[in-house]
Image (cartoon, rainbow, N blue to C red):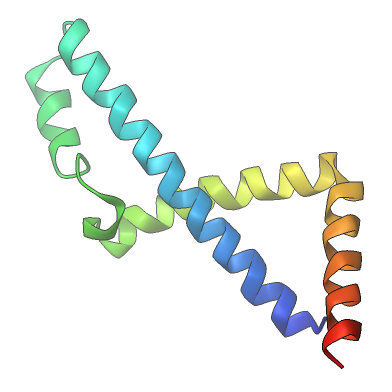
Length: 98
């Protein structure tokens, strides 16, 4: 697997994680707005982010991507054997395809 392929795959993972993080944040924010006494200022500030990930501005997506990238690095560092297993599996598939 080339470094470029690894980079593309890690970017795809980070993007997927970004979307998941945003969806979870929306659920959390909606729960807080329903059950807590939040200020109108806070609610107004959050309104533009209470949407599907695809509808976020690139700036907002980049914030989610930064969090996802940080989590991805932590996962890779915590479970290097998982990453190695995925790389080995990929190499085996490359050999089968050759």
